[in-house]
Length: 478
Image (cartoon, rainbow, N blue to C red; front, side):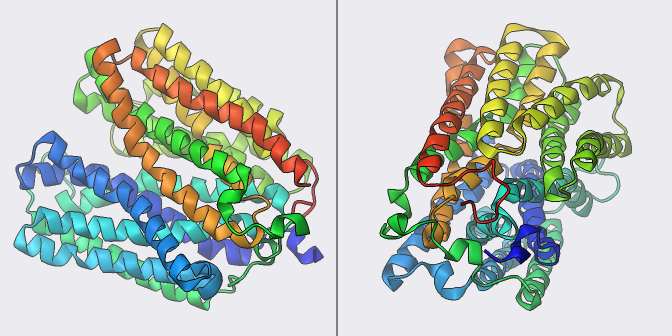
């Protein structure tokens, strides 16, 4: 392996993370569209949730289309057209989706709006298939999961500001008072977004990103290279279940929180928003902390940054809520819970399997605490799940695609397909809550974390048998 791959390639990594920002921006903006469409089209609550279904199911459909095309071509699509071309193509597909908002708004068509969101999601599916393994490949394998964590932190910046910008664009400055919006006001922000997609597609095409990254192109050893499909690797198959359950517990924990706070604690709906915001900010706090190793090899600098990064992200959360004129007093105590995250991050020593195990066990502790207590203690316990979910996606993704060599992009596509867990586990927890109560229904999340802890233990042995060791600071993983 050439020595040039020992450091993160920032010149290539920075243009790549722009697409991570877009995913977060659009996904969180959907939460603004749901009440807008509900009022404009006179929908039931169930019908308004088609926004989420159209968006999340497009990842699964997109992955299936990807596999179908690869099968017809007799060669993996991304390996054929190149990683950079794959990203640019994904952005163009998403841009076409935003164009559908124009006729949809003019004709007042809800199905056409959903078709637009679905098409944007199809493009994202291809982008995710390419961008996740590419982020891991742009530097040494040892810090691959940290680079993916950093990209995730940029994604969460998108989830933090996306809803604010889209609601400002639709409602104007007096967002709280102005609800008499026309459905046509939706088309401008999405046409601007489409233009941004096209500009970034051109920039990526002109960037120095590799079409065929060397760490992905080479196989780990000759024994593995005889395998004809990514599904012949047990780290990937077990990892697909892990992604399904991880996205499930991340989304269901927060989507069931308003119902808990309203029914059990007597919160008004309008007062719940800052706590939902705190949950998503917790993911950002954890990811900024977990990304520290991608920046420097200096151990003492890392120790300092491990304390600065999470509180910097917490500061962003406080600033956003101060601008929104929310009372910040209840949130200062959360600064102490962040210390648990920092300790867990240090204990993991940058090893994705160890981090997955520690953070999954802390997730179980947080959920049991939320189920066993009441009042604000239970609310903070449930929101802290965001802290412990924060670095799990990059850990699982890195472990699942390690050693896949030329099958990496195919394996990545299988993992992206499992994002649908977000919709299914949320629905499952909601259904369970109808029989055992909303607070007890968080047992569903406990079971998800239990499997993730098992995967962390199991995959370490699988990868060691293939000669892949994450505790060695060697690029390429062998």
